[in-house]
Amino acid sequence: NGGTSWETYPSLPYTFGQFNSLLAINMRYVRFSWALSKDRIFRSSDDGANWDTVFSLPPRRFGFSRLIVENGNVVHVLGEPSYDPMPAGVTGYLYQTSDGGSTWSTSELKGISPTLDSDLWPVNIGYGLRSSMSNADYGFSYSFRSTDDSWDSWTEKEKYNTRGSILLSFLNPRIGWMVMNQVLYYTGTGGIDAISPPSAPESSHLSQNYPNPVSTMTTIPYTISGGGPQQV
Image 1 (cartoon, rainbow, N blue to C red):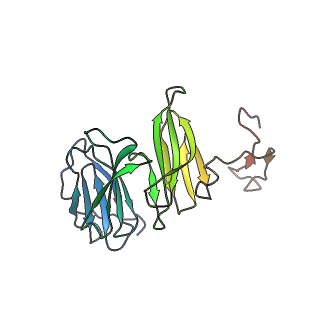
Image 2 (spheres, helix red, strand yellow; image 1 turned 180 degrees about the vertical axis):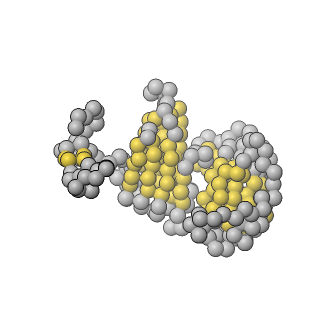
Image 3 (cartoon, rainbow, N blue to C red; image 1 turned 135 degrees about the vertical axis):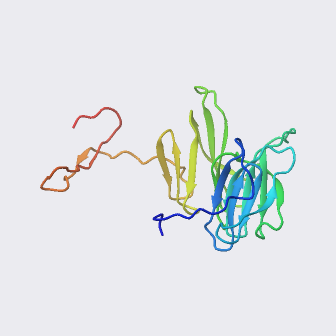
């Protein structure tokens, strides 16, 4: 009912320790709901009232990191690297199921970082980030990448240098947002024209206040043509 009241369900069939909390949950689809911890993948078929463990982390792997539910049956889970030496270019592992979790396949993940935000859509279009240390002010260099063949190969769209992290979220295969350095970036073309912040207006403008006439408060919309101190 839109959050007016809440019901507490029984906990997942697993005791979470200090370093193994619940990472993600997805209850968007009718048949199955999904949840992810550092070392287990859970599934519910009754809207979260009961949960089953459907996959556990293989030995000598660091842990799961990202849950991407394409539909109720098709699920992609990104995992961190192994304790053992990794082949060149491999950033982690990709665990996938297409039958609601009955069987899982494991493959090497290349092109994006498993611990950073990513999205994949049923049309095999996906977006992700890859990070590396940058020589500029000891920050990080993030590469925004896209795929059109369901994780197999990735194309770099743009590169950003920042001291902080980047958050990435796509509404559909073309429209998405990214937060970096406290700035919200937007793309309406799937990153084809690169994700960039809104351009500044060509001129400053002061709009009509509302409400008018003024009572105890009023709002005055305005735009400015550039950054820096302004005087009104």
